[in-house]
Length: 444
Image (cartoon, helix red, strand yellow):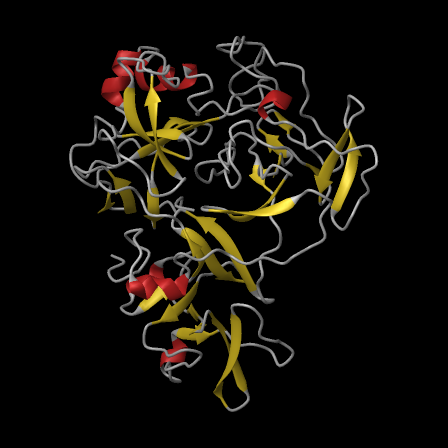
């Protein structure tokens, strides 16, 4: 499965470089207020950032099972009032229960500081100014109020973003705000675990062939029945990474970084990697995700492919959003661990350490990128360990969150804990670290 795909093992080979490895995605330069800027990130492409380089996020309005939360356009519902009880939005749980670890639970504005606008600020382009409930002025983009994340420490951090796509029963999430990608009409791009995936206007994957030359297609008329060329209209113009060449007299085809582009006629769903199963054909990325650390592996499963530890045991991530009105996350070691401990061990940390053990990092282990890191965890609380704590666990983390294996997985490729949690892990629980999931299609 996926043999020969340059991105499959999340490593960089010479053949991958034309498809986005070690390159960052370009974007359309749009007017911005003074002191704002664009930062390149490893996983999400270019994002808007404040004067200190901190990523800007929005809190999209969302209808939940028994209520709604988030920001409508032109308003901010993130306040300095600290939530102490759950809201009951995530049926079947009623509201009014006291939230755990209130001593460490921040208010919404402490977790998500508003991007405040000075008194003399003026709107520009899609950047506008809204008035908060406390009377302060706040920047908005495309009508949505903007925030930074208390989890982000350095320019280019996007730790406030979710670790994987939810579907259906998830809590409200915070989304990085991005400038428009530099794409011709008829193309799109989406964040996946393996990179920023190039798509057509209907979100079907775009591919390139090893058999082609620079700005030259060797896919003949018979080949083009399966690999449909991405044709450029007469009004289109080349720019940046985008070129146009004549595949036949009067027929113009798009190329990205000199590689002719195609759609796979046999793709059965959007964001597909199916075409990369064909020898010599590859998905195209505007930029690739950084590689997984040394010692991790990728394993085939009955549903796709997952990241695994050195022994082939599937790696899981824990995701959590609480049911308070401000829907704060609860999966980072700085946040409450009560939900995770209840899920994996009925509140018993020792049981959790057995059922979902952390993926331990060898002494001196380092990551070659910022998406993966090594952190020290207090095994009794699940919070970050104190400096020099003698019983601290040295563990691997993805986007600042620890990763785990599952005691119930016996063989390489087992994914028995995928979806363990509330509403198949959509609201809170464990999910496998999919790099390709053809069955459930959650790898985005």
